[in-house]
View (cartoon, rainbow, N blue to C red):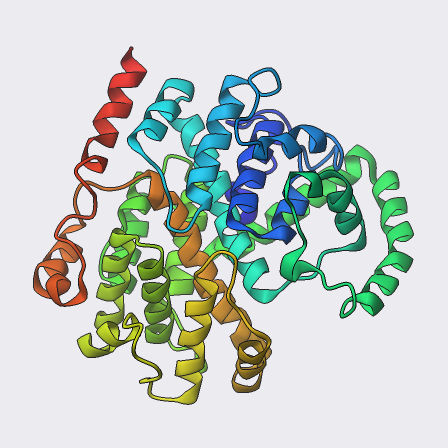
Length: 410
């Protein structure tokens, strides 16, 4: 998902929809707004993959100012900062004014590329924050120096006492990393990028290449074709998001069955107040065998447990904790998850909530005026019991598409 939603390697070679520097801004700002210290630290120095750290760090650090300066940032950069702040929050806070700003600043394809950068960071923000991924030594030192003045803090990504031994080992490896970095050069960069793309292509082999075949697979596995898969303009990004939907949310395993994944995704969408995804995942969960009463129960804040096993209850507690920003994971819950699930299953749990959040970010900007036909029928029948409104959008959101089109004509 990462190379496709970041438009790698095309963006890095200067032939993508966005420039590398512009791509780094929504990635960084959405991460900072979410509160993921790990991702914010890395994306602040992203710039181009080839040129590496320091290229845009000082500039990106100023993007979190209450009112970023037009003397520092271009019109496109200011628009990217604005929308990244809105989709980085949970729930998202996108308004009609934000849609107008996007439409008067970007072409439709540029706008989607900006949203795609926020979308893949939604996946990474949740994954890294919920897993408590520890920052590398160089990233910590750079961030404390450059980003801390603007409010950055390491949070769960670094504990001075608990991570002391790890940092000692990492410092020993730092010199080797720097040597490899300096010696790699342009051809080393090319080798890395295309090696990554080849691995990515192998992962996406199971995803149909034609729209007709893709839509047929979505309907077969998920029961409907999500509007975001129909609507996406960037072909590689569409394929990557289809991978997340089909192989991560429509398929399960012995330890993490598909109905549990969909129940977790429903929980996350409910906490994010994303009605279209609430409807999607409720439909999918019931199609997979989850009862209506169970769906009602998992979003009842007065209810605890209720699952068929201790593992299911722990997974739902994990989804609840991971769905907030920043994460509400505790050491006790992390320990429980590690005792009840194997390492590969823990990764499955993390990927489930992370794919859901990536889709949440995209659908926070591109809100449909109506549900897909199968979802519409489902909401008519079960929406009142689940508290899912008959329309996926508000009165204001119904006009977003027309407003954007009108603004672009002016």
